[in-house]
Length: 114
Length: 113
Image: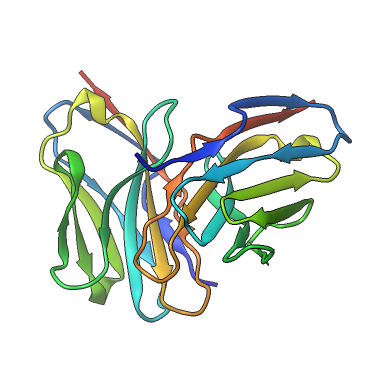
């Protein structure tokens, strides 16, 4: 079965620190990749997505992610986090095969201390 | 603004009850999905539907059923609720085809006592 794995379940950073959240996906052919964010008490929101083309994708709120095909990775980055970035982050993949559905990683809880 | 609306934010039900979770989208999306979200497990797909009256099992369909009588509405049914179904339930919708992100509802937190 196809899968998505996120490296860390919990990350704690101080404000202004740089962020990188790891995400790997299993092989399954052509894949579309997503990062979602869930702020406390709120619904899931799309941060960014990769379909094709430039492997460096820029999203909302200063986030970006890099698709590295050879490593099956799609890591999320932000140069300087803020307290308001405290949230849970989910990596997800959608493989181009039949009625493929979005498969999520288990999530990474980011806590940013002021 | 496009919306996926889940009828209840919080629900408390007794073991053995039949539970209906309702989801409505206003984006004319063909695809609709039900996930459950549990700490440390991420989101797991229960059922999805790619058209009216069509349904497909996801990764964890046991104990659940669904109904899609109209394009905009997708209902999740717990035939006989059990305590291990206490969870956050998320509905989502999308256009068909690869590359479309899903739009999620705010979720229903169900507690079965």
